[in-house]
Picture 1 (cartoon, rainbow, N blue to C red):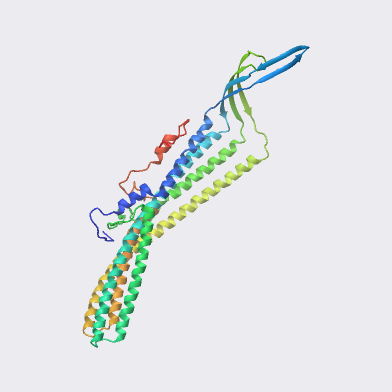
Picture 2 (picture 1 turned 90 degrees about the horizontal axis):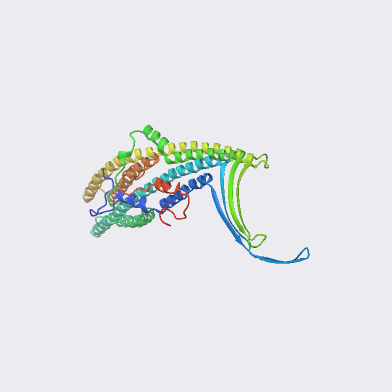
Length: 444
């Protein structure tokens, strides 16, 4: 069912194309994607703990000696130098690398859910701004038409006053109602400018010839109970909070790893020249294993473990809070949608009744059974009913999008928006196993 009608050619902007524009170009969403790409780099940073560290060293200098040794004159000029290579490898560090890697992977998963939540907020904002522009445009047109009707009404009233059919009071009432109508036009114009600015901010382009908006009824669950079940299982706000619990639990393991012994091995080779005697060369190679057993280091590690455990408790409570928040949002959105459906039906009946009433009052006024004020009141009631209908139609569409958002399914993939899908996993797969390189996958 088409809810808000706006005239335009076949190539008009549709609600779906506006959502696609917002998905591709919204700066808030793109900033979140960049944040997620930076979060992906936590995994290769954690995996670096498994890999060896290699460093090369080189030095060269001048050493001049002049003196006597046992009565023998000694003078020597040396150019000592050395070049070497050192490789060190961690063998055991209390499972800290394992737990840091799991922590980083949970951060990536939590970030993906946060990104999906921002995507849903962006799409809902785009749908809301789209419908606001349509509704405000229609409201402005109604108010402008009302001014034209009242101008004609004033002209007729003045003509009747000139022939003595009505009094000066009737003329004043018509003039007052016309002034109020012109004021409402100014308010409607201001509201429309605000809606256009918001549309431009979210979608990225000026709204031009918007096509009718349609609700997402086919994606709305059949019952409130089903909606709540879906939301509690799928909403990214909840899933991100659950991954945050995993992150906090991994942090406890990392902190506990500081109490474990560490084992490492390092090897080095070095070529030295002219260190003490001219024209000498010496090659040095070594392999060293090291065991470090922490006994007591002031108690900071124990405090860090206790702190991390408290943060786990906080993360679990936050997850429960998010569940309650999502459930409340679903119930609210469901109620708003049901109310909007009823409001559309009631407003349509109200408009039809007021149209009949206005026609009747006008006919009765022509034969002197109604006053000018009666006609003006009937005209105003019809205008109010039509504005209410536009608002109800707007709420009907926006309400359906709000329900789909609160259950966690307002994504371009789920509601089948024709747009190139952004894959957060693609970037993660490109960087997770990189051992070197400073360029990002897109070439920067």
